[in-house]
Image 1 (cartoon, helix red, strand yellow):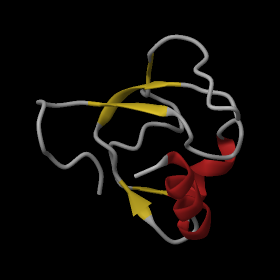
Image 2 (cartoon, one colour):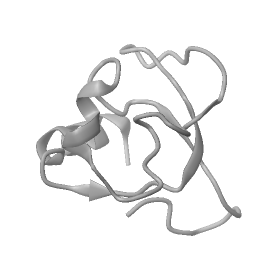
Image 3 (cartoon, rainbow, N blue to C red):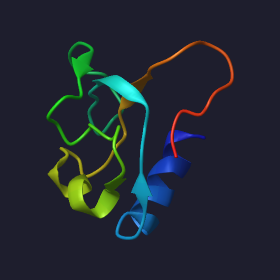
Image 4 (cartoon, one colour):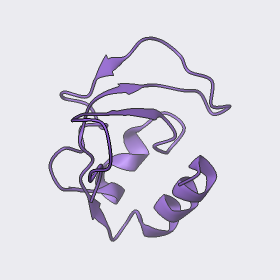
Length: 84
């Protein structure tokens, strides 16, 4: 899914949808999609979506107001569920 489409879906659905994303790390980016910094643990941050999380509860705490960041998905390579 493209970043623009993902952002559009999130903005429309954030108040109602609960998601889980299977990741341990994230690479933060700016509003211009430029990566800033190193791979960072999601532990204790708004990016920790490993447990079911209502997007509207956390999205406003993220710089830039959205999840336009590089998620480092965990697990084996190949086809698998990355989020639900």
